[in-house]
Amino acid sequence: MGFSVFETVKSLSVHRTFLTLVLILIIFLFYGNSSPLVDQDEAAYAGFSRSMMETGDYLSMDFPYSTPHRKPPLHFWITSFFFQNIGVSEWVLRLFPALCILGTSLLTYHLTNVMYGSRTALYAFSILSFSLYFPLNGKIALVDSLLVFFGMSGFVSLYHWIKFNKKRFVFLFWFSVSLGVLVKGPPILIFLGGTCVLLLSINQIRSQVWKLNPFLWLPVALLPLFVWGYLSWQKDKGELIRWMLDWYIFRRATDPVFGQSGPPGTYLMLFVVTIFPWTRIYLSFLYENGWKLIALLKTSGIGISKHLFLWNWKKEDYSFTSKRFLLLGLFFSWIFYEGLASKLPSYPLSAYPILSILLGDQLSRKHNQIYMYRIYITVALLMIAVLSFVIFPKFSEIRMDTKKIANQVQSIVPENVTLHSFGAHGIPSFAFYYHRPIKEITWEDLPKTEGYILISESDFQIWKGMGFGWESASDLLSVYAYDRNKYLNLRLIKARTP
Image (cartoon, rainbow, N blue to C red; front, side):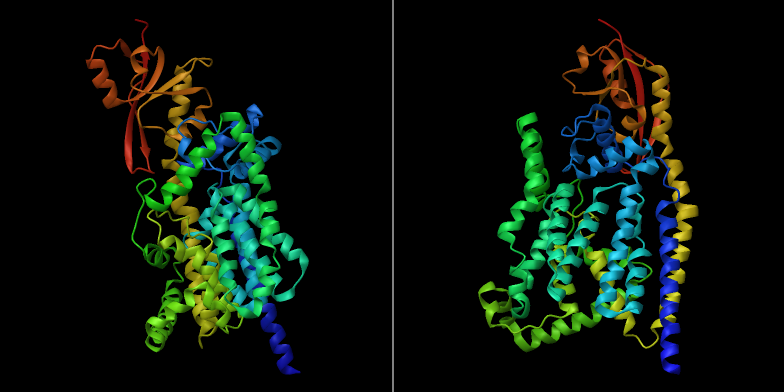
């Protein structure tokens, strides 16, 4: 009887700690979210969403300086809905992404609890929710927050379908796929589709995986994307769809995007930083499983490669375990992206929940797990406090530049006059706060453009020296472009009629 009471007390302690941490995470995710927009992506997404709300055109993605940031439309539709019903503000913009990060953390706790129990679930939740990088995705309105939520929803549904054989999990799996492709296209197919293919290597569950009926339900799941694509194609004769295929599929497989590239192993090293302060557990996990891999290679040698071929899978006799399921999930949420030339921090975001579960299990097997957990969570909470009350406010002050300049230009340019913009200084957050027509022009348009032009100071001096009839309409406008780590010196000029 005493042992039973002791176990109950421990369970209550775990649950109480979990609920306390959930409350802290909620406060962190929603506190201070009225700070100015982050360039480039967040401001561009805000502009697309507000334009959709104001024009009623939910197919076009037209916003100054934002062409490279166009995506499938679900994120913009949801944000437009919130703008329409709550109001246009930075806090509203970040509301749904914050909810998605919170939801992903709760799904991670749930899946770990089903697999390993409540204490390991607490560890996994803590590692995911109070690490350096992952929770920050809830404080900036990027599509990746939605994508990781739908990816984790599909991953959890897949596990439940295999274990419990309930038809509702088939629906939830394909529903997650359908919403995921409407958020960012192929990544969720790579993650969940690739995981399903790898699960076919396990004879014990192969028939269960096939019962997902991909040849029937995949086209159904893709139908909303195809309908949107068809309507978009009809509207602009395929310009947007062709651009997306080139920019998001063909180029990213072979070339760096925005100059961000790295060799295979980039994310392996990146996790050392982004999972802080849980890095030691991550290194312990790599050390333990690295030696297992080395031992396997010593035993099987080159013959291990035969396990990679699909036609040999029927001969294998693997058993289905929670850890094997998680490790297979890591391949197409992490390892796949190590092979791409383009390297962006958000690519392996779906790996963080899975990795957190594996690290939670790693910690739970330590003899001094509770002592170590208390140290790690204390450091994590201190980090969260410093981020919330020191780092973010200072970063917010830096982001005020474009808001101030937008207000300054608004006070000079008449309300119904189009502002022309020349040069590679495009800042989507300026366009969002300016909230008036902006037309981007090329050097061919420059000699014949009349009215107000926003131009870099260097271009102003060059073109003025060539005899252009320009007069300065403002003092030097200096804005720190933190995404480029440099100051942009701009000037508003007025081109006189020849």
